[in-house]
Image (cartoon, rainbow, N blue to C red):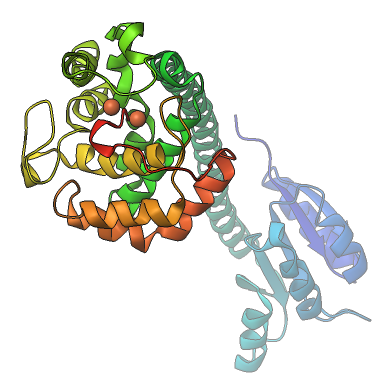
Length: 374
Ligand SMILES: [Fe+2]
Ligand SMILES: [Fe+2]
């Protein structure tokens, strides 16, 4: 059942208020009375569905009262009928401008009052229903968005955790291999960051750079399969020992082979190809130029630069200047010229990485590059 409508009657003339009140009673409406503008502005807040507004009142006339009612957002759509004995075109225009919806002439005709009141109340009912529906919809959308955001956040957190665990495993694998050889993970930390700088300079996307950064530490995982006698030997390796040493590329690729992980796939490529040389004189396959995977060509520069600028059990460290010379000399023979160009373009970033991860660069005699165990 509809709630009964409540109408605010504003008139300074008590007799007219009472007449209107009786007419509204007959229609089954509830009503409030206000004898001036101030009282009207207060009582309009009493859940009013329609206002019948006199024009001529002392202090604040009907136009002014309507204007003030309309200033409040809640009452922008409240139906207001002006009850007036004035019917000039100017007055009607003024009333519309102030915000009245309709007019009723004085003296009041009962039928006219009933018809106009009923029609505006109906209009308000429809408007209220639309507003209610809109706000219900907005609430529903809000609730669903909140729920969706919550589950998305949970999903992202879970994925992040899985990815971190994945990365952690890979890092530990790389460190395990490196630790046997170097006793430190500093080499793979620097080398992978150099490789990421090179990838960025070559125009890799952020996702691809991340893969280079996380996969390049695996370049020497195959050293796990090299006997201590060879891996830890101080001084030069015999030819047979050197052949065994070279197998770390194949062993590494075998360890990483067959995974669905993008990182392990990239690691496999890097492990097998980081000792190939641009002119085809590298190992294990003697690939030439662009037949060598780009990941391998990038890691070759990053790995060699770090190996020759770092002190190792079987050699002393090179100075940066000497290392730069070596890289330049190897351009087009050992290294891809494009990657070498990027290396020198990004030399400032390379030095920042070098400074932040290493403190043990010492200059001494030039080692044998051909048998450098990077
Ligand atoms: Fe290697
Ligand atoms: Fe290395």
